[in-house]
Image (cartoon, rainbow, N blue to C red; front, top):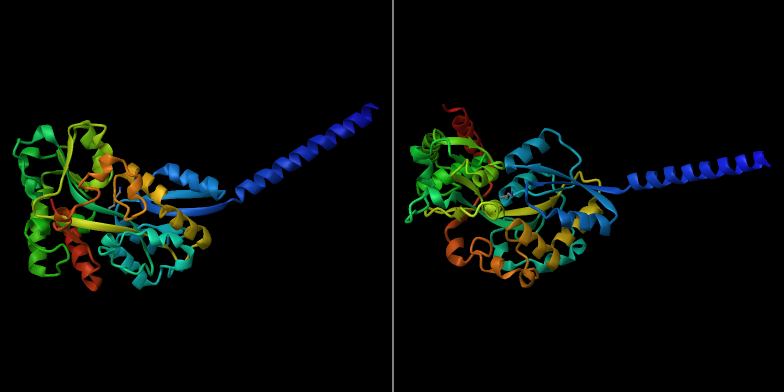
Length: 351
Ligand code: N2P
């Protein structure tokens, strides 16, 4: 009798273990989606929601500039499914042949896109990319450090009284772009004389900067370590609640406007899931939740009705025409991109 009980027990335990093994085996076989995005650029609750609804796992990785992302892909980083390049970088990547040509029947929510902002997209028919967020670049600063009549200009970085208390983006098109705008030139110029002048301005500014940096400067503004930081609109808005002294301004000389996008890499191993994710991000409610979280504008006309009043009236988010007029979109300069890389290297190595 004792033996029979033993056999039954052993059978029971073995079956249970088998089930556990099978079950955990199943869950590790969940589909995975690898996303490569800018940091602080997506509400991670939405990522969780998508994972639950689609019983999959999303793996997030982050970059701080288009060039860093592109260099990593070029160096052979494989495995990403969806990437978030700005417009000009979509052009570089599509010319390179690494982007999947999009099948619109798999993204029905494309109908939610707001035509007003498609104008700033460089891929107007969404052949390879779907607009994600529109942002502009400006200066985050501490109000207590400036005079009442402070008029924001890119040339604030020339003020040695703030030496060591200022940062600029570690992003060649944005940093050189600020110097070009200050001089009254286009951020897309390929004129060597203008670029040389911009280089010299930037080298002058660099002497007063704590660093070129694209992520930690936000904490520096919050802690009061930095007084002036070139930064992306939404990033500065995200930290304003943590320090009420932080303000955001678009310099009087004008600035860059980025239309960042979602693209699927040709090498993606999970194209169907990637399409589902892009379509999910374009849903009106999802998109509104994302805007509220990141403080950037998703050009999604279905989303606006769900936005809180604060966001709706914020001129840096739903940008009125007078703000848009002062912005210029970065474009792909083809072979001439090398002019910028050369200058950037010289600025980085200047003492
Ligand atoms: C988000 C960065 C925004 C990207 N942290 C601007 N192109």
